[in-house]
Length: 421
Image 1 (cartoon, rainbow, N blue to C red):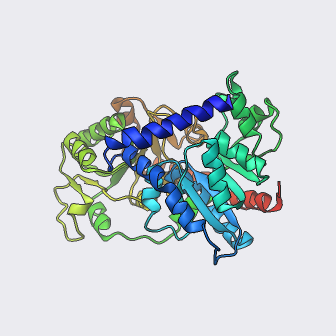
Image 2 (image 1 turned 60 degrees about the vertical axis):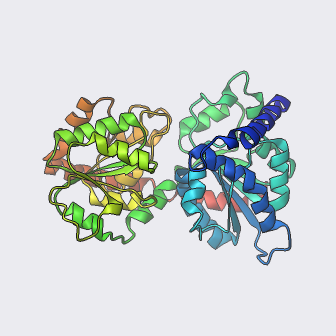
Image 3 (image 1 turned 120 degrees about the vertical axis):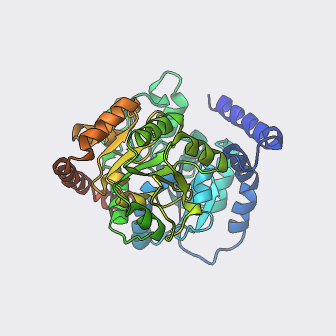
């Protein structure tokens, strides 16, 4: 099975870098991924080919995307303070690289993740020589994991949510089960995840919760000021639509805004380019402006919607709103719901929350609502819109919800530092 898996990835690597690269736009997500793969070894070997002035041991952290990196950030900060590591961070998604390429002071080296061939895994590890490795959430790359085990490098999986549907629970999943057992220790979000792993003989598992709570609470307590946004929100109560992911998210949010022209909306797309921004603007009946077109002196008196066309500050922008809709819930990849919850906002999201235990917990607590249609979103919003007593109650409950789930970072870091494999 490993031979077949390896062969398929070698073929994919050849097709991407030799064939698809001729046609893919360098500004598209696929184009950026290919560019990252083609330039990877030049960057890695330029960074590690000679003696390093930095004598600190290397800790490799791998995240699929920028969202998973945010889960890792409190770990990085504490591991740097307690363990004295130098950090190599890799992303599978080119958007993670894009967001950090000009400012990644929390990590020392930033690279794309090499495609998961056996030769790539060996070449990467032999270049960076990590003392330990941490994979985030659901990154199970067999060749990299098996090479880490072969080289006896302690490796950890953090913030895993195991549903029982992952490939290692199926008959065809032998390679993935073998790779899963390469982890020195697995930190999971809940008891159900631990029980699923126990069913396939995994005992090196601890329920710790999610370090993202620590990161988000620290962010929410950080001073932040944006003069343009402050000027916009001074017009009236604000509904924020964070990480609008696809057409279904957009249809719901635009319809809600069009039904409630007296409510102001902050629209934050998940991805930003001219085509996406134009398509979003067309959906809104009320006047819609892009942030880049505005200043703190802009007359917002006739502007209902402000679209944020820059990245990296959504976590802070939630503080300006009273209600929130979180994008991605019509796919398996609902975006972070707790960034809004940290500010006491009630949140709505699409129905695909089977992989998102926090969203499920928010629904049980009455702090979140899953919606599948415009009418469901509208009914939820109207039930909250002018109910000051309920909004105040939900805000108090939301802050308490967040506080109860803090402090997992310390437990995880302590076990990583103590565990030598």
